[in-house]
Amino acid sequence: MMDAKFLVILALAASASAGPLSVQESDKCSETCTDNGKFKYNPGYIYSYDYQVDTATSMSGASEDTAKLTIQTSADVEVLGPCEFALRLRDTRLLHSDNAGHMKAAHREEQFRRGVEASELRFSFQNGVVAQICSGQSEDAWVTNFKKGILSSFQNSMDDLTKAQNLTETDVAGECRTEYKLVSDGYYSVSIKKSKDILSCTER
Ligand SMILES: *[C@@H]1O[C@H](CO)[C@@H](O)[C@H](O)[C@H]1NC(C)=O
Image 1: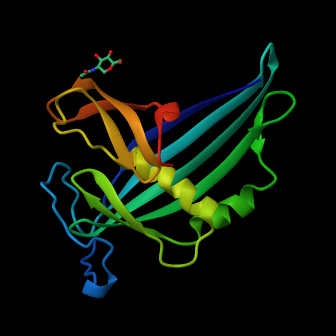
Image 2 (image 1 turned 45 degrees about the horizontal axis):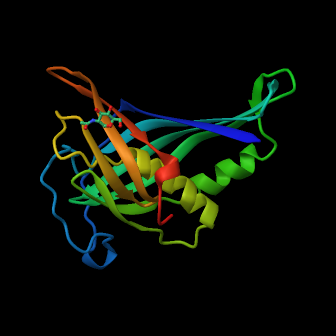
């Protein structure tokens, strides 16, 4: 029996890097834009996030036979204009556990890195929700799916950032039961834990 565990960590690392930009009308990913400013993302800025997925697969009853796989990447989210965002990846790593349990570069790491870093993915972001994605160039389905996972973590559909909430969240990966919990609510920052029940997802 296989038992897979996933852990996704998305942390805001640093921001800043500006420059005025304009998006051509015909080049837009969002057909409409209804943003109430829940998140104060500034057009012309790039926001950087650390993204990590840890997967452990083990055969039941043989805990020493656990295979681990880790994907790390830096996700740069550029705000092109109201509701117009672009995702680019860099410093991508693909690591797996060897026989001794140490993490080392996977054989396909370079191929994986080139695949996911090759092009940017434009998306429409409205009130914390990734409303649509627009992959311009022909991108392999596995690359787009990987980026959908990142955008799914980036999304926050809470009605109020100061109140815990359970909801069925629809994102680019499907419709899943999602719980938002307030970890801390300070004067300068709010820390929110988002948990998604993957087994509850439909319409994937
Ligand atoms: C959300 O669901 C969890 C578990 O089902 C429960 O413990 C929690 O109190 C709920 N939170 C809210 C805000 O309803």
